[in-house]
Structures are given as C-alpha cells and as structure tokens.
Image (tube, rainbow, N blue to C red; front, side, top):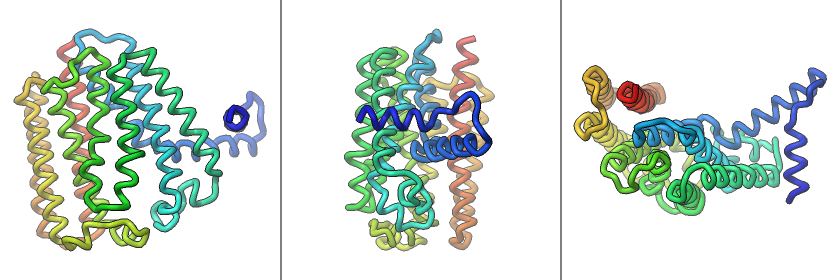
Length: 314
C-alpha cells in the first residue's frame, strides 16, 4: 500500500520545470482528483463546519481553520470511497457515466488510495487540532454516508431522509470544535435546517433525472407517487425548510435587524417562486429553476449567519 500511495503522490507532483505536455497531464490528474473528491460539495461541507465553529465562539483561534480542514479532508475521503462504491451504477447513468471510474480515467486502486490518504489526513487534523467530540462527529458522518446511506439507496426510495443526516452533522462538528455543547438547542436548530434542505434538493434532481436513476436499478419515488404528486411533496418540503430558516431570527442567533429582514424577505421570495412553480408544467427548465432557488437561498442563509456573527464579534 505504501508503494501505491508513493506512486500516486509522485504522479500528481508538478515538477519545477516541465514541458507543456507534462503540465497538461498534471492538470488533468488534478481535475480527476477534484472530481473524485466531489470538490464543490466538500468545500460546502467545510463552509458549514466553519459556520458552526464561528457561531460557537466569542474569539477566533486556529480551530477556525483546523476544524473545517479536518472535516473537509474526511469528506473528500468519503466522496472518493463513494465513487468506488457506486462505480457500476454511475456507468449506467448518462449524467455520471463520465466520472473517472466508469469512464476508465483511473483505476479502482487509485480511488481507494486517494480515499485512504484523505481519511488519515482528516482524522489526524481533527485529533490533534480540535477535540474528541469533533473527531467522533466527523467519523460518524463518514460511516453514515458510506456504510448506511449509500447501500440504503439501492433498497428504498426514501433513503434520502435518513441520508440527510450527513449534511446536518458538519455544522455540529464545527460547533463542538468551538467549545459548544453537543446538544445545544441552537446548533441543533441550525443542523435541522440543513437536514430539511437536502430532501427537496435531492427530490428536485429526482424529478429531472428520475429515468436515469430507474435505469440504473435504483428505487425512485417517481414510480410511487408520480411526478405531479412528487412535485407537490417537494414544494411542501421547500416551504417547510424556508420557514424553518426564517425562524432562526427568533432563536437567538441573528441579532442584526437588517440581516433578519433580508432573511425573511429572501425566504418569502423562494416560497412565492415555489407556489408559482406548482402551477407550471413539469419541465426540466422549471424544475431546475426551483432547484437553483432553494440552493441559492441556502448559500445566502449561510452567508447571513456568518455576517451577523462577525458583526457581533467586531
């Protein structure tokens, strides 16, 4: 295993002097790795971890870097392992068939080794840079995603509901890294929003790509409810999640009045868009617009919580 890891590290190292062809090759390797670790998703995980941390503290210290970094590295390892677990399913869906493993860009041993490197690095960062609670939350998230949620997707169309715990735990990890009490009502409230948000996030994708999931042999809610009923259920979840986010203003986190009003206004906008969408035809374009609306709202929610806390710190 050591020789395999060393080979990978040597392969991905960019020398000080290299030809244009070598540079292109190195950049290609980096692009493959970024896809294997699902960089866009894992970066968001690190941001929600940092959010939990900053909400817990009164003074910033090195843990503002180490906690998000450790969780990010574990999430990267978890994403790489997921690529290996779902390589056959990914090959059956057009939206995932070009991922590195089904496309033949890398070998399974490369993905395994990548996962191990990130697992070890993330665990060490959390162990030495934060505390035991944060490390245990990180490991729990990893196990829940790869050992519970991923296999469960093949058995039930409702797997996303328990699976959404994966996105709810990173802010809790950040909170404990900042010295917060694990079962504090405030961070549980924040975590519940991220839990609620992930469900319509996935179901909207299901409305768009349901046929591909079915083709890959995965159970889908589309067959149980039909698209129109599924859209109504998804819309209900969006409204519930947005109202829950707006309620953050009343649980003691948001102190700035302007930020409070902006959160309520943006939430009301998403709810109106959701209600209008129910009256429209079920098309890829209309569904994607709603998908972008709830995701943009979530990013805004994170940003507003950051800004409000930073204002209070300084």
